[in-house]
Length: 180
Image 1 (tube, rainbow, N blue to C red):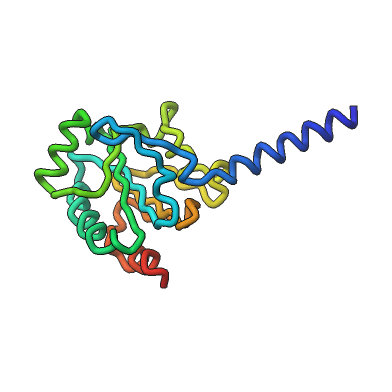
Image 2 (cartoon, rainbow, N blue to C red):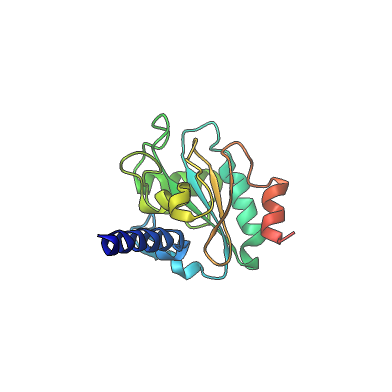
């Protein structure tokens, strides 16, 4: 019986460690155009993952996100947008409608992925990792609203979160990008 308890404890410990050892690069996504996007292609870059919506009071953050991306994209930094309809149905569009909206209204050039769920029973595995300390090994950060920003370091590990009302160009984020 003692051997069974020890073996079970070891299994729980190993499975807990493996969950915490996951990094951004362990996930895949699909672009708004339906193309596979392997997040391991971002190795060595700082990444901001942000859930977006087209009909939200925070939607103008797209402009600041694009400006930030343009400013730092040549310095090993990328923004990845994930449209989500989890809050007050503020992202009702199809992937093609979302792409047209982002391009026409904000000139978005940073990578935008297909619409996903960022909370609830159908939460996307990436967002399960981002929001759960048991998964990311750093912190619990359930998505509060549209435009929550997750900051991922060059090793693919969660480094910090910027809440929805924190603007993309706030000092905290700039210092993180610049390594200050």
